[in-house]
Image (cartoon, rainbow, N blue to C red; front, side):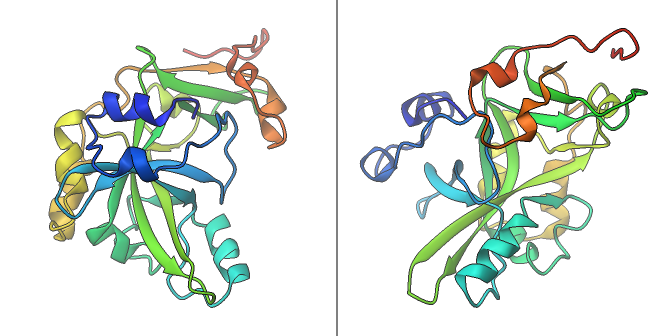
Length: 237
């Protein structure tokens, strides 16, 4: 994510009552790793959108130590639509602590291409606006009393054209479903699932191959999103 909070606040009509005064500005990051801080959008106590930060990867509620928390985060960066309401780590958050996770774009390693080696792709919106992933968040209190908030992205089975790259993709929600998704008073699993059932969820999404440098977290910069040639044997779309 390279956008500043002020940009996200304007783009997503976020209430600024306490956001600007208390929100830390995260450094621009083109290669975010699990446990790092990200922005999330959720409803506040008054039911208005607020922008806050959380660490990427949901901390299991039963974590007893910092080490347990970090370990649980590394394996809970994503939650599958098929089982998010059943998995112990995710089910409580799915019912009452849902959020939207903004991103300039994301990387996916191609597993569906008939190619001799995997190739990363950068996926973003064709209009260059911010992507929003359906997500869940939770709050964990460390043994020292520190309150830690964390979040996971909800993924689903990929649809064309993204299915030609990878069999999974983030769950994208159109604007008219944002507030229903963020409504913490809605806890009926069947109704929440209906919000995620979107026709043509990959409309307006584009993808292009990028350098394998994204495989190393220490590599970080806008150059990671620059298109590269696939090569003759590797074709897409």
